[in-house]
Amino acid sequence: MRTIILLLLVGGLAVAQATPGTQPDTSIASPANGGQLTIPSGTKVPLALKQSISTKNARDGDAVYAVTTFPVVVNDRIVIPAGTYVQGRISNVKRGGRIKGRAEVLMHFSTLIYPSGYTVVLPGAVENVPGAEKTSMKDEEGTIRQDSQTGEKAKTVATAAGTGAVVGGLSNGVKGGLIGAGIGGGIGTAIGLLTRGNDVRMEAGTTLEMMIQREVPLDASRVPK
Picture 1 (cartoon, rainbow, N blue to C red):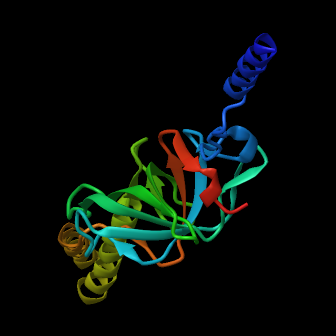
Picture 2 (tube, rainbow, N blue to C red; picture 1 turned 180 degrees about the vertical axis):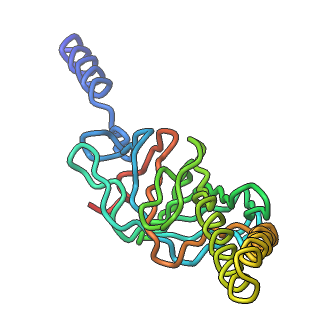
């Protein structure tokens, strides 16, 4: 009898060790329950500015506010819904020169704010500015530059010279016309030298394209499906 009781006790102890009372921790998210998502490096995100920006009055360090205009999808899952807020800052501003040099503005985006309030840090740069007229991208860093005004200034000189020639010709004949053209051309050149180049200006609502420069991990439980 003692032998049977001893065997039963040993068997019960073995069962207890094989079936611990503590259940596995299921709080750690896994791919099966959508624990983590990733925004790949190089992802392009369409944005619209929430405020106007101009090189005339912008300063280094000024805040930039934008909002996504179309959802970004990765592997059949929305990772950035439309209406997500994006924050950034102006890194460098340069006004157009009187003789040479075009206006430029460089900005970088640093934060995504989801409608739920979930906030994600990211590195984002301007890839394209389809909504801004007479601007182009200067470099891969994301500098937006005003288009050249060489043709416009040449037109100003020519118009002033033509007007001077007409006025001089009416008063003093051919010789007066030549003198008038020279004076008019000089005035046109002076106007070109005294006038700054056009500023880069983007109104509220201007569309931009942001490129995410590094892989960004997301908590899938906080990203709306």
